[in-house]
View (cartoon, rainbow, N blue to C red):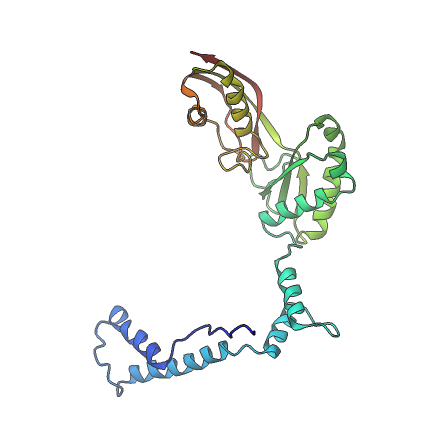
Length: 290
């Protein structure tokens, strides 16, 4: 059974005239003559007539029209190819990102190119990847730290794996390959820099009241996860660059854990972050008291 042809808009001449006339008091309260002999009403009816024709054409999307739309996307049907297949190719191609223009483009393409490096996923099967992009910033040479570096884009690769030692050894080559890919995708005058994160240490000492002494490990894991640069933060998408950590964040997090009566005290050594910096948990001590 063929699918019914959708009617994209069912407004007719009478409804268009009525809608336009209803707006007259809003834009011109002194216009009170709505008779057909009024020149303004004549123009309203004329534009309603043209609009009705446009709406009619909108509902008549023929196969020939669809092929012309595909040509606008640079897609021509191959010999024997069905129109539905061409439309599917066009929709897929239209949604693919292959040029780096916005910060989101750089982040997406940097992630894709990193994961496409031969052997990286087999060498680091647990690799967690997060990419950040800073516009008008040169983190490679430091000129974007205290002032804008116009035309420069810095892509930060935030990577985590159980084998961090080997990963650090391979980071130079990884950055070079990602940068080479982005160089082919960037706008002509853009200068791309691929760098590692700029971390700042955080030290936390916390005392909580709970009936179960073993709950300290749960509190520890919750804080570690919350500050994780890849999967942490309030939305689980990584800690926001430049966002300061407050004691209230820890109170809210820990007191939401089942079994915790309350947080007795928090000693937090958390530096202010620049917009491109992230936290790295240096030391965490949890004490549980009855």
